[in-house]
Image 1 (cartoon, rainbow over the protein chains, first blue to last red):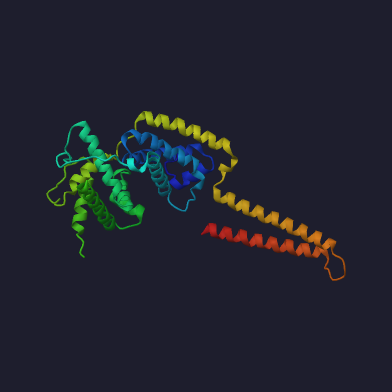
Image 2: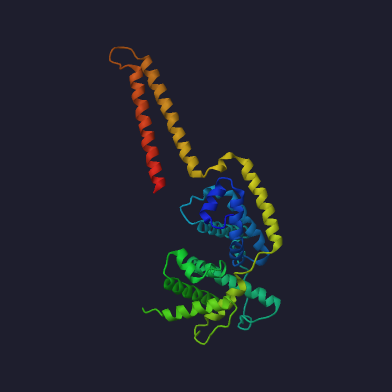
Length: 179
Length: 146
């Protein structure tokens, strides 16, 4: 029904009370929001934070002013909810610190505990790189966009996007090295 | 400072291959970035759907929230900027009425030949304010169009 409608058109209909339009947007973005949240909060809290994001979208739908892209507005809400989550938990608990020696830093670790530790280690590294680096990594990994699509969304050349992406990955590697 | 665009290309191609679970050539990866990509892929898997239980729970919660929104106020039917515009226009109309009433009362209390006719003066205020409202509405419409 809404296959060809843009996000902004759906958002406008939802603002006017069209429930189906809202759920079309929800279906479009659930996976991306879930992946974004999963990349930033501990596994046991991912579902709650994802739910909070969509509830916040319903509550603040009227504040979307169509001047920006819908997904920009949505991801602002995602980031705000993640920040609220950590604020509630207390800054000191932001990402539980993981003591890793050289051996445990081996990314091929296989035990469950090692996997959980490794996950937190990478999550912390990702959270510690600058926002614009996080964003391009999330666009490729969480949103599943190709580099061409990222370039189109950001209004940049493909070369510029690939260059920014490499700097972002280098920054994560440096953070992992500091861990 | 020169920038190695070839390395940007190689890393992008390696990422595409890793995310598609295809074999990738890491012989050119002298910076150890392939390992970072594999680690990120383990943290964030683009194709992973949220659990079905979450989807069910979310739909229930969202339906409930949507109902609340619908019941709360008819104001949700209009985005905030329209409500602000309507509120501003309403405020201007209240001001017009207040001004014209004040002018009528003042003139009514005055005496003497120097005072202009009360209806003349209130009409001038009324038309001037209406003119301002019209210009404001035009400006708003023009701004919206842009």
